[in-house]
Image (cartoon, rainbow, N blue to C red; front, side):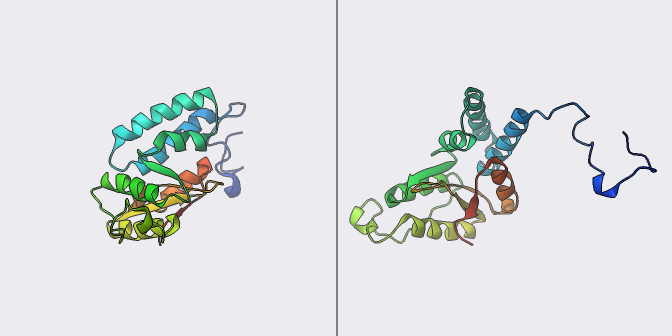
Length: 181
């Protein structure tokens, strides 16, 4: 029933805004829209890269599978990272690669980042914290998300998107937090 001044309910004023009775929401289209928003956020200023990743995600989603795994695999080393907890050299390499997209260089305060002995005294979490702090100085945010395994995963966004990213990522099932506050 359409809303009229006589039957207006302020607590239910959006009840029929999104779909007429009997019409279902296209969940696939909604999922794709949220994935697209995430890809735009984690590829700031690079809509072409986001579009390429989106095409790959759409193809994988059509075949079926977990959206988190599909996005993770599609963006790995392009707009995100997914590395073992015990791989500090990999964390440095991945963050350097991602930060270079924005013209930012992270100072790891390690003489030789390829020397395993030099990396023996650090861990991935400390490296992510350091990178996150330095990226904040350049108005970027390094995000990590819970993988449910002994790994670290995340991406970099513009600092101005700090409110949007958790909402969009959360809608897909990513539980995110900034690497540095």
